[in-house]
Length: 187
Image (cartoon, rainbow, N blue to C red; front, side, top):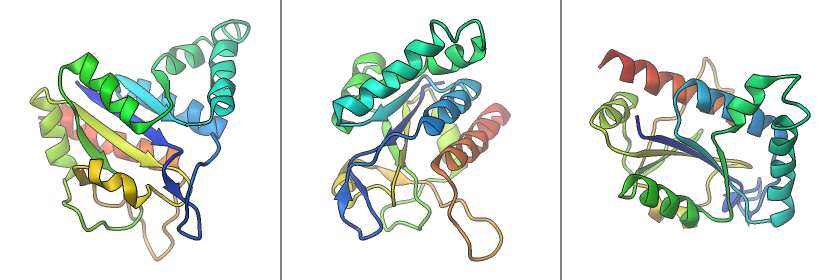
């Protein structure tokens, strides 16, 4: 299965709809890497333009691959799928180099988007057909519009019961991965 996941820290919106860079949340790194490894993601990219933020993630990974290894082996195994990139363009180039072509870039959002939607079933089928898929998750208040030209389509938003709809990105990533991989396994 040629499934990739990217967590964008830039370009994303803040609550005022300004394009910003967000800080890395260590819980996102741990939890999304665990979900990625569980669901067979080839690589979990963290897109962060600030070098100091990337160094912090590197320190976390180094800890779990050294002194933390004796404490929790599975943490190091989960973090083995993490790849730090300075830009989203670097993610696309990395996948093209590994897979031989650019992936289908599927955005995610808590709000419905105007660009074409792809269903979870269609995404699973694409993976079954041995095509590369990159799931793109935004931090802050979502993926900034300047990046939308690089997104091929969006998954439908995850909605619960009622009007409240504000999942953490790590929860949303786990739900999306579970839906796609569950359908993939049924094909």
